[in-house]
Image (cartoon, rainbow, N blue to C red; front, side, top):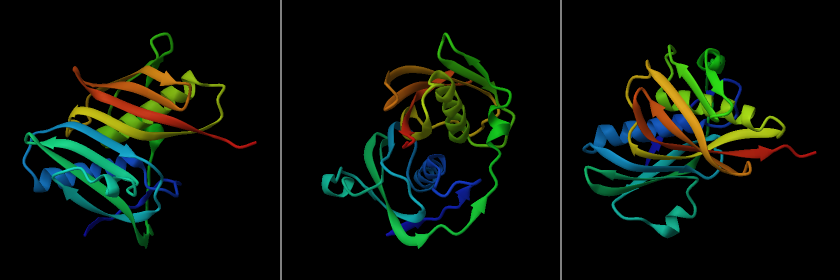
Length: 203
């Protein structure tokens, strides 16, 4: 099986979901024909190991149940299913990550449950969406204690290559703090929804 290599981001001791999404998207673009549509990218648990993967033309329910990351999409009109599993090799590198540079100029609209930024950083679109939505959740659920984590993306198409544009996220649905859903608008285009969950702190 092929594998993906990762580094931890900042002081994290797990692979950030945005990094996993970026390598999956890059692999698909480099090896399969575009366009890529109806993307359903789901993370079921944290990983601290490099990951191996396989791409299938049909869903494999028995494999899906063991995979911490699953991505379904239409690739030039054909269904593809990408499954990722933890390898036995732990991540042993770390990259700097300045999350504050992404969010410092953002504007939060509490009544509209939204957040906006005109991005000027070098970070990828998914990294910006994750940072903004985390800050939005922290403000909308200010009395809740715990860690907000990115768990899923539902996209009509892949995110843009350039991140030097405006980003607007707005929460549209939530089941308490267990699942929240926010729409993603980049520039003038709506791309889909990002999902977060709160892992509550134990007393």
